[in-house]
Image (tube, rainbow, N blue to C red):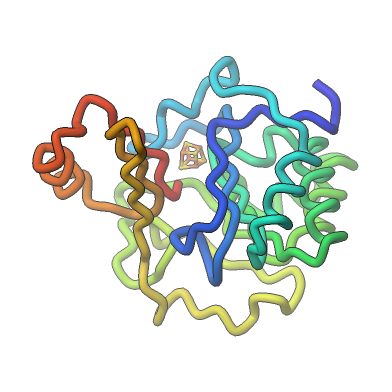
Length: 208
Ligand code: SF4
């Protein structure tokens, strides 16, 4: 796959559930880390999802007037060349870039040139694998207490996860299916789907 093409599970433009401000969230397909208890196990295989041109993603984000991109997974750093190109193009257009990774930042720092370029085009990295035994209860956007907010630029330095709320983005589509992003207690989601009759059609790709 070239640096222009990304394997993507999902793109959601105009969401407030995936970081500060109105954002375009891009779920990368494939995760080599595969944390126990991950909420998105359907994103583990790199065989799923579909190919998208990075320029098309950035163009749609710019046209949508979002503040920035949130790169999430799956594992963004499993596709460092295309991820770097996506982040570079986004920053060139004045967008902010937040990337989640199950790898620790220190590991990424010494990996390869594509990863270095990728990190160089990111404003904020949220790092570390999900640890089901260390559940986070205070900070927004992260699932376990080991995960860190590492500011590479000062663009999001005023963002305070400890006083920010987790938001959930729920969209009922014209065909009756329900589309969910962000953190949501799955038992509540099941209740919602039962109530709306959309249980069979629901698609969940949460913050992970
Ligand atoms: S939490 Fe993130 S890094 Fe861990 S398995 Fe899920 S997608 Fe991969």
